[in-house]
Length: 181
View 1 (cartoon, rainbow, N blue to C red):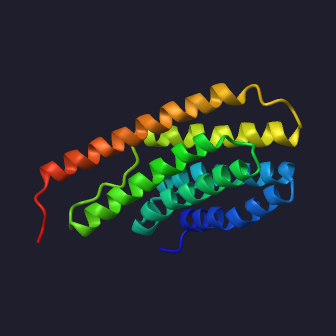
View 2: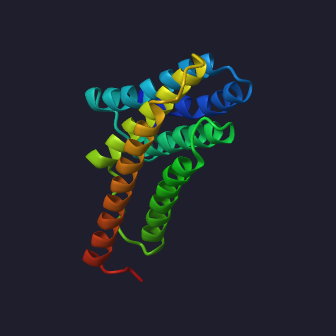
């Protein structure tokens, strides 16, 4: 359970309060650096787990949770300070709440839960991470945010598409498997 990939994932979660503080205190340059480090651990932990055969059940649950905690806190914090539109944060957070609710529902119904990310789910994470990086970069450099609307529309499209895809997978799983009583 305690292996390098899981340690990197836990470190990503521990970066979140520091990241929030840096944004609150207007240290967007440091917030960007910390966010980039945290985002790098997202790819690094998975790669190390695969290459060194250190995959674990804890890591399977912890890694997507760390992504959600990092991205949700970034979107909410940046929205509070008017650097990300609230409508975009609502879409990102709503998708994650819907997915978490579906997973919880399947657990409560004693149904098999497939938590493996899809390529669309991974693309959503990458696009959302990229959006936060662009936002932090522009804010840190005090540049106009002209790039952010097209990027926000891309984040919206990919986030909604992946949310619908996960809902489809959940419904299909519920139809295929009888409820255990």
